[in-house]
Image (cartoon, rainbow, N blue to C red; front, side):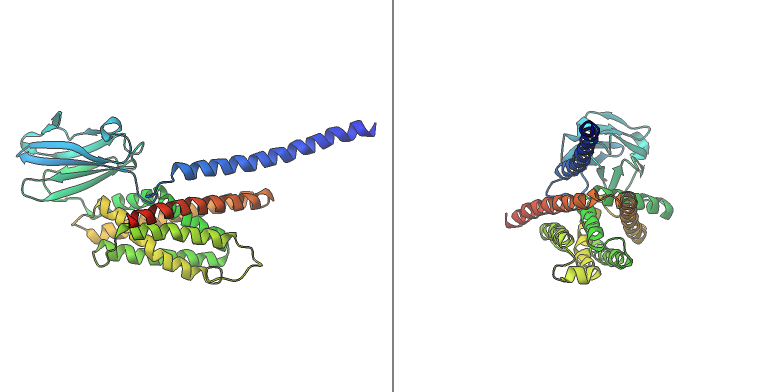
Length: 340
């Protein structure tokens, strides 16, 4: 009689253990899929399509897609020209008003996170506009003169900064690696602050032309920084006390200098307005910080919900191995790009 009463309980317990193990591997599989989906050598960059518009005579323009990283841009992106402009194949007719009014890019944010529109005017000047899912419409003024006010530029570049950090998987991996290394303790505040101060410094210096480095070494160093942080976070508390574990804020500052150069590279692709340039630079950096704080807040919320469960410790190890493996893969690709 006892056998029949215990056996069902034993089976239920076994099923519960299998369920917990299956749930752990399911989460690991989802994390691995996300890493593979985003695992490219240029993982920190937004996926962009580029369009060029050239003024050939007053009110007449030629336009074409000149660069794309994925599918052909004209298959997924459709420009909606300002009122008064009509497109006839590659020819764009705008009449006396010229290319003036609202330009909207339909489909941006799906296959491409951004569309860069470069307009070359007859007087030799050029304008660059970046359209994203958050701001798919820009205002054109018929010339290279940028008549946007300070508030409009601030809003636009803040949103671009948020979108860049959330789309930059390797920057997010570095921040998450710091969270695993330090934990949600008071020391985390100094570590994140050091990272912020460092990449703000080099972002500003590079964007203003005071500091220029070739992108391949910068990208390779960013990937290697993720490998280092992931390896240090995997070490047990009984192991040797390394520099990263003793002074994580210092390590975050040193690597933050390199990450700032990566942000600057993206900002150069997006373009900075000549008018209110410092406002654009400052608000882009603010947007990056907002995106970074959103990531920390989301991780803290997940930790508060799951830290009571024992299986999360094993999941932590799996995630760190996935982060380190993806970063090591990027490192090899980027170092090979330098050699090539």
